[in-house]
Amino acid sequence: MDQHAFRTAVQHNLRQEWASLARFSQSRGMPYITNLHDLSGSPAFQHCDTASLLRNASAPTALERTDGDWRAAAPVLAQPLAAPVPALAAAFTELVWPSRNAVSTRAKNWTMWATAVTWGVARNATHLLFPMSTVTLKALTMDLMGLHTPRSVILAVWSAVQNRHRSAGLPAPIRGTNEFTTWTRLLASLQGAPRPLIHPVHKTMVQRLLAWRPTSLADNRDRLATCLATICCLRVAELRALRACHLLFDFHCSYGIPGYEGTLALHIVKRKNDSERKGHYPAVGRSARPDLDLVHQLRVWLCVLGIGAHPLCASRAGVQCHTCPPIFPRFVLGSGSTHHASAAPMSSQMVRDAVRRMAAHCGGDPSHFSGISARKGGLTTAISAGVPEEIVYLQSGHGQTRAARAYMHLQDPALLFATYQAFGL
Ligand SMILES: [Zn+2]
Image (cartoon, helix red, strand yellow):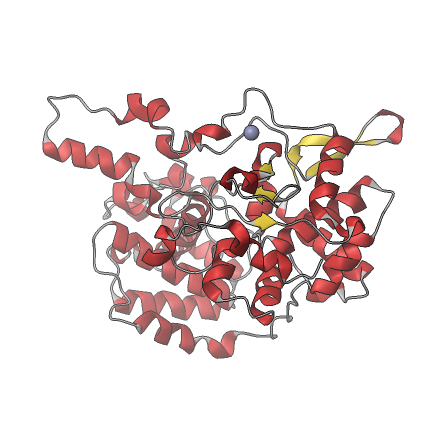
């Protein structure tokens, strides 16, 4: 069986007009139908509960669209007093329950589930899909492998299937502690070419980039973004989300202890695994050498871009800001072939390219660098300088939240600068 035969089988089983309606993905390995919602009437699904089989919860819920602003979401959340208990529970399942997973995770899970559903159509096995038995999952995996589906996709299909069962409160096809890990081991030999080693951004690179004075706007942006992301152990998404109001200059002066003038705290509004939604405040200190002072250079950068916090900024309410301009924007070509900042932040791809270009500028091999090199570099620098793990956590927010960390408050902000000091600036 090849991809073509697979698609033909799917179209044959969808029958008549449904066959011509189906759109297929262009992905490697097993193709999937991208418009399943148009095909729920097909005879292929006649013995299925299509409402649960084809339910797609990947769109952001009302609560997610307002980003935790209860007042804005209240009209949607409020249920009539006469509503029976099952209706309340159904409203909860629809409006709140999807947030068990991040929107991006849900979108990916849906694509992977669509792969399983498409396979069910091809094999005349749609009635076996949900709930799915271990036997069915084995059969599905056999075809995924037969169509040379990449290992990462097979794993993603498995976790989407598992996830779908768990969120419906059904037993998942892979059961038992550590059983999923054992399954993943089965695919170890499917790895193919080993993945390239990704290096962390080294502290000497940060020093070199801070001393560099490029003339182009893009070089300047990429240089500052790489340094800030490394020192603050930022994930790519966190770097991209930074806006003018998230640079809190002289923030640590608020402790009332002298010596923190000229320092900076970043406000990371939403960090992965931040279940308490406290945000995170990595710190950047004042450099001993004026030419390597990142805080000062960021101030200058805001002036160059001509940006600052917007008067209508909502971030004080703890809500993700969409009003203020991004600190590291995309540049667009304006009149007279000059570049100017757009309202959109750099894309993930642009962040990766920025880190690679900066690595190349310092004499590194760009193919061994990626967006995550910055965060890796911050963590590596702090840990190799002997900064204790729970102190590095204040900068990076890494790992699963432990109770003690959530309650940890520093009397003196000095420890917050431990990771910054590891860079020897
Ligand atoms: Zn703002």
